[in-house]
Amino acid sequence: MDISVLLVEDDEHIRQALGLAMADEGFAVTDAVSGEQALELLAGAEPDVVLLDLVLPGVDGLEVCRTLRARGDLPIIIVTARTDAADVIAGLEAGADDYVTKPLVASVLAARIRALLRRTGRQEVVRLGELEVQPQTGAVLRAGAEVHLTRTEFRLLVELASAEGRVVSREQLLQRVWGYDYFGDTRLLDVHIRRLRRKVEPDPDEPKLILTVRGSGYRTGP
Image (cartoon, rainbow, N blue to C red):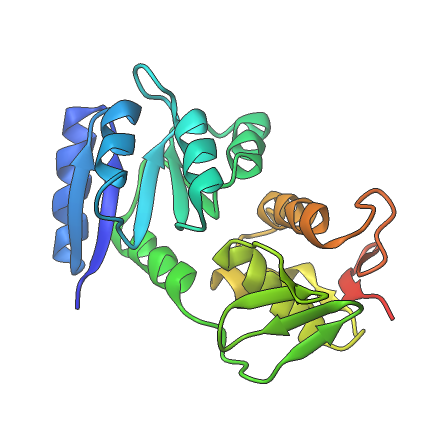
């Protein structure tokens, strides 16, 4: 079954070219030319993933991203011409799972989408402090109450918890969670760690569950 993609892009030439290229890669593509149209479409049938341009007329990409993330865990990849670190981080902080910059190569984008949508291979329950992580159901519980994570945040937590206190390098996490080499760009990981801590740590400023190992990576606490 084809992976369904909502492409939100106001530039007609980019929208048409990327839509055709993604269709050739086996994706079922629906497009939207504005943030308002995207939100209207998403109020009905939900795609497997959203490719979202940051610069849009009317409601911009950041606001669309925040709105979608408030609704649930729909995978979002930001597609933008911007390469400035502040713009990338703003998009990730708004809730995006990944980002790519124009010009795009359809085969590379297709690989990123498939990596984003794949499930974790671990099946047994993992415990981390008061958290119970259930890979089979994709749920995280604290004292019986569900902690709502995005799919990417969940996979990141599973990778860290499964290491059982051993250090997992930044490179290993990028490869295992996002599925490809970021060539030293760890902004994606750093923002997701911050987002994850805000949801699972009693005090995100004094983390006890997800610890930074300076110069190496991350590990879980006792």
